[in-house]
Length: 341
Image (cartoon, rainbow, N blue to C red; front, side):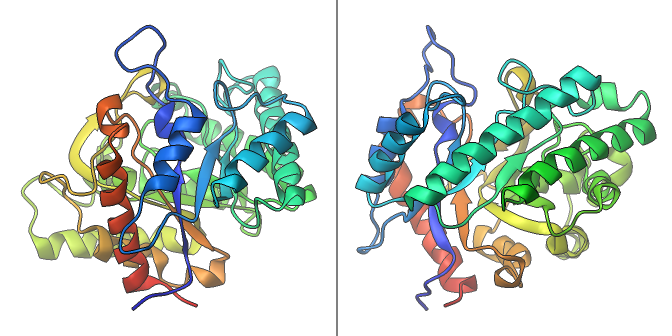
């Protein structure tokens, strides 16, 4: 059955994350990512928007109002909306560790301030009508394990400060569940952090099918594993229900993705979920069925769109138009099964 919601978005950051100038996988320009997105089509259906990473080379976080309006014009000209924005909260961008000293944590909050400014310009332009601002702890798991209780408390306080900025600007923050981020590296630790922040109207969870699959297996947190290798279908769905029951009430942003059960990463994204093509024969997930667990009650939590995430695909794959048609087809199947009007 065809539904109006959730709107279907493509992420722009696969053109940036894990890409390096001077290598065989250089960054892919915003113009090219927009072109590939706008050209995707399945049975007359197209992507309706993008989710957007607010950092170089796609965007200068300190770009002028006029420069940002020009970007908004460019996106709108492709008949696309902007949804969720990724704040540049990591060391080496605008921000720094949410678990760091006062200076570092101040930079983290500053990054959220800059994201809110850009969001306001896009909102006033009209290219953005929904979505959240995405964050994570911008800190590694190894450092967190030195004092989990104190470090979770520190991250929570940083998130609260950032959330006050977001709330004052009419925005919500979604904390990305990914096994490489301190205090967010297991489903149980993610719940503990959200409860410690205790601002459910402003701070929620961003669920990604690829990353949350690894929550089940306890990568980086074996004490919270819900499955062992060689699990049965019945064991998988029981574990999936346990995880999603805990995190779904917090979920305000959602990524469709696939995972082959392995970990991968570069730089600060070390030992994280390997995103796979939507039709990867080694994919562990029934994308449509898994998405249903997260999208139950999604409209009541303010979700109006979903986004594909395929970080660290080879450039050749990203530059192939059929890749995006296959992804769009998977997105349409999710909406057909779990959408609303």
